[in-house]
Image (cartoon, rainbow, N blue to C red):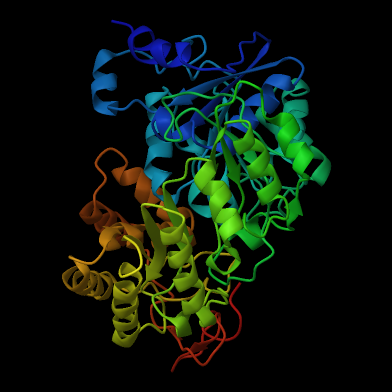
Length: 510
């Protein structure tokens, strides 16, 4: 039976806003995960719309099947969503990737689409493979064995450049000639270092959804970007560097792109409570009976008015980020959130009738000690006396383009030991949701790795496991060059105490 007819056509029929177009140049826009994850990506939807707005270009979407092994047994070519054509039957196979741990999925996607994953094995008879998204802005180098083109930065700037080159080239080399040197264009066959990022001017914003579907992880939600970038100086976060400079949209600009039929609207931004129009836009939408979702709210800027608007918009659980287990570590990260801010937020959530407070945080920070975990446990018990508490705990993963680039990973055993302690002492106090320390280690390797990490992923993309990763990394000669660095609470992030002087162990490593 046809995979497209049985699996994709029902999803297609449930969509609102789908674009159908025929044109001489075909683009397959792929997401290296299942449909529900990809359709929750605002950036993915923006690129889909922009390619379809280009003269002579038709863009259709592609996703990994829910069960890749079962799909492969059918012997069918991977189809696009819109028409069911073979995904590899195109001039450009573009992949939008958000997460480091989707690295193996990228390789699997190319394979399932009938393409040779390694760039050096493809020629002019194959589609160009382009990879973009947050992953490439964070660290493009593990992708260089696979991509013909890596795009870094804002897609609003890059799609017109790529489209013009597609219209005016007949070979890979001609295409390369036309895009070489443009902002945000990284050609692994020609370049060894990433270029300046492409930054969209304010006139090309805001970003907003093209398709709304009940089968997205953000079910039936229309997304609109309130701000791009972030004005805050948090040292661990990529939002300030990757999406900077901060660009706020005007309230009416957001309201103008929201269709009348939208029943749920998600406001997207790195620090929405800093966005000057959040209350006005939120109140306008809730007065129209629209359900409201927000991507992030800072505890230091929460007040009863804002919380009330979110409550009126249907929010049941209030969510904030602590980002560190103790006050001293929050100061070290320049987070700007205090214990008093979190207590205030808990009181507001209780007084306005929210069913609970969810607090996100990281453990495994460089200068972290058992005393910091003790503070987390005691403070969580204090919060739980005010309202029901859920903790979302993730191991800290150092990223490129932040001062923490050369911080050591906290260590799987250390993090697991601290997670077990937290679970033991808070099991009757708070709901706990933890991210695996072992997979966080893999993420940290990918986040700072080079082409050799991509080649390690190529060895294991069909049978990925922690053990397979360790073996493959050993085979490609990967070593952890940051392991000896010792962050200290008395030093700014990016400066290290070390017995050995190295390029990364001295000074600010950004």
